Image 1 (cartoon, helix red, strand yellow):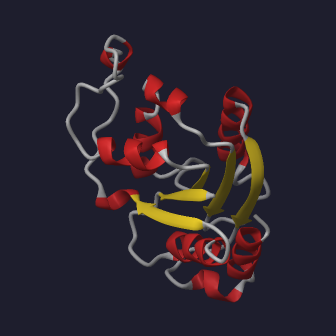
Image 2 (cartoon, rainbow, N blue to C red):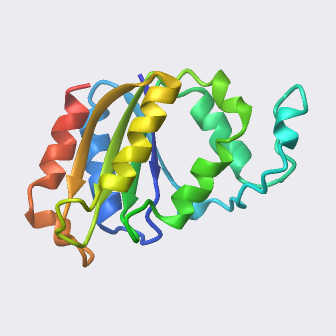
Length: 177
């Protein structure tokens, strides 16, 4: 499989990136894996103009790095969403990329499986509820198989994730694909 991980952390080498890397190491034993750190891409928010629906190639009127992300997703068999939790949602950087998937070009993608990796500082039992609701809606709407989730609570400072077993859990999820 070709696996693309959209890593939504604005913090370089933070807990979310460590979790995504652990998953990638496990999955790359049998699959091709690419991590896209969305903070490294200049992607403007969707402006809701629907121009992409009105042309034959579904080209967005905005000229930015989203074109490169579309190209990478076009060859993916699996998508992994990796995000820190900010106010019970995905990071703004990742949300911008997700919103740009409003483009009908998404219907040409061959993504059949999806996984979710999420890291939050709080320890609340319902910390991931909003993200999980959005994730499940996407699975259902696009008829995509759920490949699994790794949800990590109580991880705030850079490197905190190293001591909680989540990196092994993500690695193991990757190896089971």
